[in-house]
Length: 207
Image (cartoon, rainbow, N blue to C red; front, top):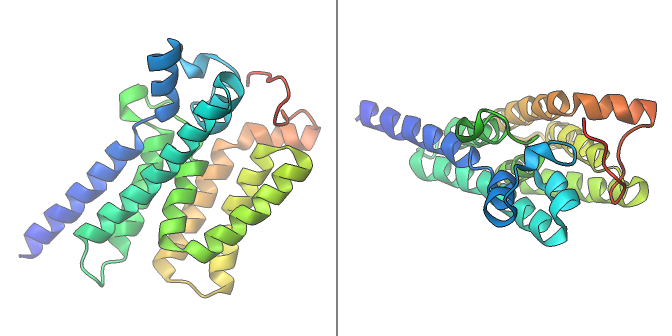
């Protein structure tokens, strides 16, 4: 019995990675515009670059689909896990973001994982994620720096979970995801520091 449960959990985790590895930004660009989105704009295969290169409609579509990937992965984890196995949906969520960032289908060159992180964390801890997203929207509206908003989301979620005394597994996941976001945004952090970061709606310099 335990062996069967382990196999089901392992399968759920693998499926979550494969789900996360479906890159909607790349697929939309290839199928509808005949381009590799990674060769345009900032070179990132994510919602923000899709917005800048392909327009609002595709950008919003990719954003929603990327969020839903995270929601779906955690849902798979909850479905496959026993009630006391919170680590399973948490790990499924983490692996979906690993898949988004390093997709096996696309040469391990994916996006930065913010939208999928929002989907994962909103499913695991809705209120802290909602508060972090509202704060980020305000910052983006004022500064027009999407990357700054992304960094704020990633940092605020674990802080809020600690303040609200959330489950240890979810706090640990939020810290790991924060590190993922900051590592993937390291060039953006340098540009923000030097005043060279691209603002939303401005002409994009690749890099």
